[in-house]
Length: 495
Image (cartoon, rainbow, N blue to C red; front, side):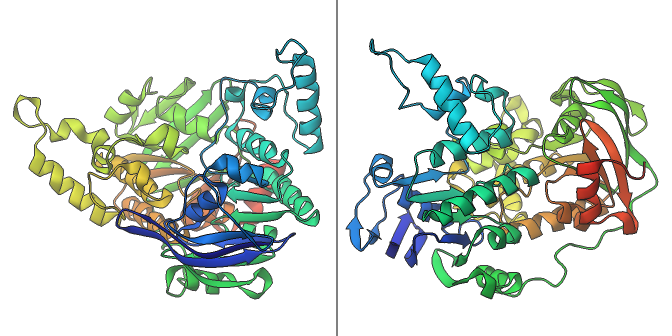
């Protein structure tokens, strides 16, 4: 039995956890839900030994335990998987699996034959089809996440902590994890599971705890708590009857046209985007959607033709794309988008620094301060101020900073790569309203999302990709989550 009793944690003036008490029995899969900044990740970090609580206690089987670091937690059988991957990208799959426990020869060197054999056995036991000798950097993001999970599970933990472990996974991979968690629970493992997707909470968990502003405001059997009530507990108010804003009509004018784009990943992709249109990209993870966005932004080399505002231009670099009025919000905000060790203010203004320069090339501090204030108010960023280090913000607030950076650049075309992945329902709603607003102003948007229901809610049309090709175009009554999933798996549809 795991019990957390009156756990408190503060970061400076910010109270992250307030007297949180909850418990989980062997075989429980306890879902933790709440908005970004509610304290979910902090709670798991305390349990993992990565962070020490300011007050309260942790009990295992009726005895208080004190964790002074991750080694203490691991010694007690607590394994964790957090949003930030800890794999060493330049090492192989097998080396990452047995990083601190590699089999040795009698001379003290790594026994590579045994290492490969043991890695193959672990991968097979967990139904993960990876080559043991493959370099981690060559794996997709989803495969890296699966490897991180298997590495934790291979330790046979008593308690498994999963913090947004599905955020980089496609539907097939999520099903793989659901089956794995079910097997662990059946064997008596306690699993604490964080997700912002209610269907995952229902599918994975038998119990759920709701956090708001650092407090546990409700616990229930998952079957006894529906999504509207969970949203009310998370936010303090009822769920909006209409989760997605109304779609304004797009203009007839074509903002961007791409014809027969090809690369080692893309195979003859063509599309047209109108001014004010939100064009969705769907399909299973890894079917070329991200590479298509990167090709349009000059970050993935491709051949073919692109017209922007009727003028031919296939950007050869992001700088050239930006000059043509394109902006790109990448999937991985922490590794591809933000400078985590820098301030909120610097991250906000990176794309517009030339506009801020006054005489002699110096930045005008008054203009900069006004931009900071406006951006923070507009995006409702919860921060101590523009000088706060962006690493200290919650995931949802980090995403708002990254999105606002590109909106400050006043783009004519905005490329979005799964921008609501791993953010809470309130932040998602905010992002939907912001993107709908700029579309109404005439900005063309191409939006890739791993959530088919989201695409139906936000997009005017959806292109479904499979194997680097567009295999279906869906609009109107044809555009349903079921049809998107069907086309993603089987291909085919209107084109």
